[in-house]
Image 1: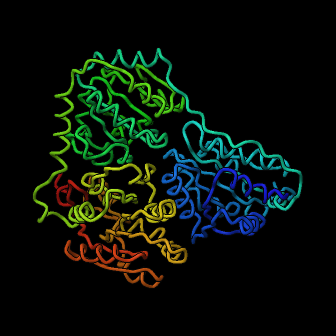
Image 2: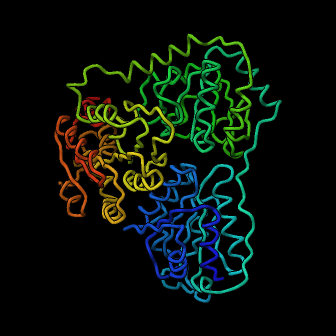
Length: 542
């Protein structure tokens, strides 16, 4: 078969059902092979960056590799933001990029760049196929690497002259991702540390979600009465209504939640790389605390903090063994105290006079089913979602730990394709939404019925906040012009609404929920309330 057909055959063997792209002439034989493969649906987007976000959101939802295709240097450059997001978010992704013919390489051919070198710093592996016969070997390896250990993106460069070449292809078995388990000695070490603890805490990250170990984490926390904090943008790793949930470690995290980590004497970090945001610029864990770090990736352990105990293990395998432990519990009062601290900052009473952002989140809580899936873009608007929405079931939240703008809506499209029966809602600011707004047409074309909320304050709000903190009243580059997102949505065939009050939002949201159609609700917000806890005047006053 041809090398192009072998690529599609590998995708089929891996169980890939959706692939995302912007078409390009450099990989036309692959497109032709996809046409002949009915088991894989190809979603053609309006921009490569958005196609990569769709694939990344789809991968987060399915826990299977997202597949995205684009052409040469120009398409590859456009989708690099999605590759970087998959890298920082530990999301399995395989990227196929068309490349100039081998005989043109090194001559600065049309749209030529060394794609494997270009992507090497933000991928687990970047490779170019130079021998058609090795196509199954290399593509299968790409899928294996993307899913093994700490998941992440792999880029495969496809010189266009190899794709139509027919040769004998040999396909190996589809490899299962290794699931290492802790040794008996390591489990006993964890038990010994916890036995001495008076204020232990768990920080649970994406590794728990990747391993599908949420139920085991609940069992471990309940059996041992341990408080659990979610790492940055991993809200659904533990039920937020659970009496042992102690909050989310993200941007603008309330001081009461941060104190839970600062006051802890033993920290069990499970499936988290302890990122800059989770650790508040690497400040909330000190050398006086005992750190137990369990992660599937050897290089992650000790990369930020040197642990007392470092264990290379799959989160599900680790929790299965940890659940067999029995130990004295000397911290139940501490655990309940930390839950009360969390409830104190998330249960605000004066909702009627609060800003519309807060009221919108309350309406979402009341109207959405428990299994609804929410995605968000980067921006201060997300602070209200992070602090006040309740994620009580697994697979209900997808957000970019990379902080990529333009992510929310295309990621929601990918998630909806993964879970067609779920209600999927994306939240974006006007700045981020405009970066991928063209994908509304993609949603209309493929009948992907999500609801997009756009918080419109006509500025890049997060950057304006930092301007006011460091250079008060010297506003430059952050004001944006007026755009009617309602009219823009309608012009592309979607439903559009614009609201200024919570009552108007509730009515519009009810209409959107009642229809099986892509909808955009534009929420007009004030500039002054720049974040959940800060105003522009307040920042200027400091």
